[in-house]
Length: 430
Image 1 (tube, one colour):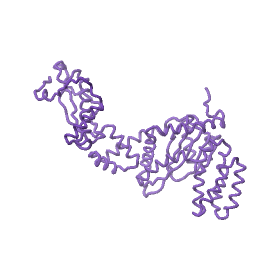
Image 2 (cartoon, one colour):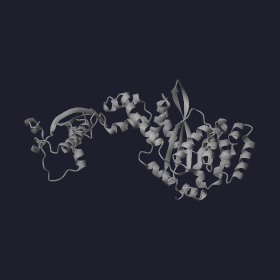
Image 3 (cartoon, helix red, strand yellow):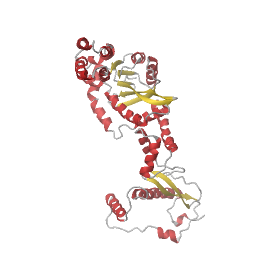
């Protein structure tokens, strides 16, 4: 079938006027906006300027694709009897960042044209998928995301479609959770976040998170694991064995919040690793047993213990604290009695103390996760909870500024680690 040019098509061809001076992008945008305003056309929303521009851009790109495919420009006589030619268009509505846009997709007589910018059976541009994942990472439910897209973009997106988009995340999550890791990490922080999971009945379940600082001073989330509420050595042995199997041969220090059974598991997997209890968590937990009027006094009297210049001095300060507060608040002195896990950081340089006496580094990550988790309320399954946490982690630091701040903040501590743990941060040569 040869392609002919109708009189109507010829009349539709745009007239290009030559200009003495080229028009800049900024001037062109200003002209379009002014024209839209003068004609009473909205910039956004259904039928707005952005939708029309998107339609023109997509159709122009599709026209370029079919020109490359058939080998000649539209209405070019060289295309007659070429064996394959244009065969009209078909209308298709795709969901874009500016709402639903109806585009005309060209066809060829041979049926071999495969458009790339808007693929066959594709109903959403990639930006829409990214938008859905971003909203889901912030904790919005699928119903809330659907309502948001309908309200803002006038687009009807079903809950099932949103589920299909977010389920794609699980493929990436499996690869991420099993990726190879570095040989050695200066510090690994371990913490848990409780989420509500409906398994017959709604119950709190822990999601464990391990975050490391690399030898370059960057942050690396090693993995997330769902627990059943137990925090024994067996559970942690499985977690640390998994990390070792993924390449982690050595961890200089591991900071945690007194998780049960963890030190024994660490010793089994990495015998030389020093386990440090998070002092900030210890102080917070202590205050829970203290009357409101004594909060400031107890916190002030605990400070000489964890800021002491040595373990011997810390022991003396703790005995003084116990004599003063032990009778009134015995639970507080009991919390601090596990001396072996509390004092390791006292043996190190002040730069190391600053970064290992607390899990503040991981708390900033947990704060983002908790925000997403609280917005969801509870989850129908363990997989749904892990998916939410994973998407929240993947949305961290979108600009990269956090990574740069981390690197600068860790320069001095890493130098101190290099000296204190001589040889362990430097990979051995084969």
